[in-house]
Image (cartoon, rainbow, N blue to C red; front, side, top):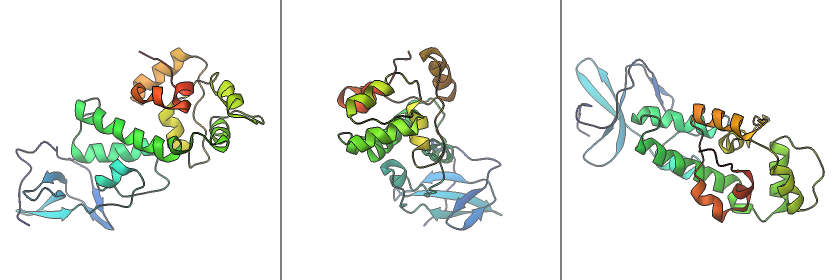
Length: 206
């Protein structure tokens, strides 16, 4: 694999940061580069040579992060895992590239955790418990009615799904909107029409 520099590439340098590839820590500021072969690599300078470390496909359960070679840490919230990938690739938060990949990542995660089993009462009961709703719900309709009164951020729900944490419950839609905008934790409404859970949980914030 030939050595290249980061000039002329769309992926910015990670100045002042250390990158981890497998068990190796790259202490010099690395760059994300796209070689002639189309393989994404982490590059870092050692004296006058740029050394290339291929980013192998990962075992991450999220399809997008797996495709991008992100390492899987079960304790890492999906939004944070995406943030690391975006930082490595130089995506500016809020840019078209960032939004496109963010939406894909969150859609994949939602489908993996919830969307693939929305016809199951157990899924709805688990969702009620996750957002902090106490009670014995014996039907999906009962769950829907309970969830319709709750203001939570969908990304927070995904972040906390496999942990003991509970997403923040907001008093009203305005408080939820302020939080969502300030943290850029949006979830695309375009799939809500096709999904029973999202039709209940999503709020029109804009």
